Length: 241
Ligand SMILES: [Zn+2]
Image (cartoon, rainbow, N blue to C red; front, side, top):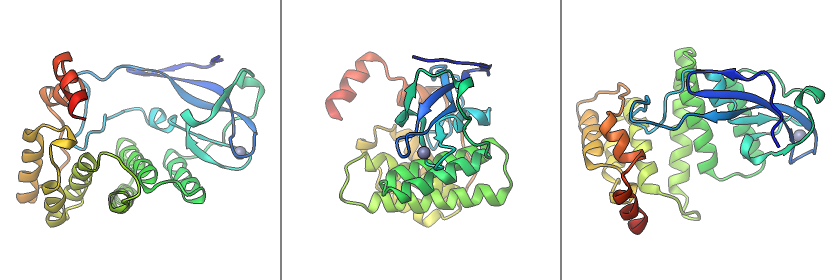
């Protein structure tokens, strides 16, 4: 059951408060969460590293919950919700958005999370730092951390995930970090298992050859092909995946 207060409406998202229970210390606390998220559309802002641009920093931050008692921080979706009204329990710590993601990475290391988990957290930290117009050094540090963690995840042979797609994301990060030679190496490893249009891979590959490190947006046509395939394509994708 969801007890929400102080709904804060943004253009596409609604943030609300709810009571959750910490899986580590059983403490109950109130946390922000995304009560409503407008579906992605061809008019959404999506960058070529496949992330949706979110203008309100509170939205991405609400993906995580942080226990005020033991500071365990992880995805909100992994916390059990509780019927207690959020006004009646202690609030999650007030912490800067970027620090919340740093805490989650710390929790991941503490509890031996897979490098892919840590990489996705670092990626979110990087996107947030950019969306939040943080100082260039902070943005750069998050980019470097994302690259290190993604490389670690891709080198791990003990877990299965879409390595082709993540190789593309890593290549795109390396392009933006101006490590063009390495970006080209990873772009070359991207194949049809990435489920990405050849047109996209080729255009980003060419940017790396041209030593262009600027972020790029996906066109509405590419957003549709990647995220909103027509039913006929969706059936096909299910067969080949
Ligand atoms: Zn706790």
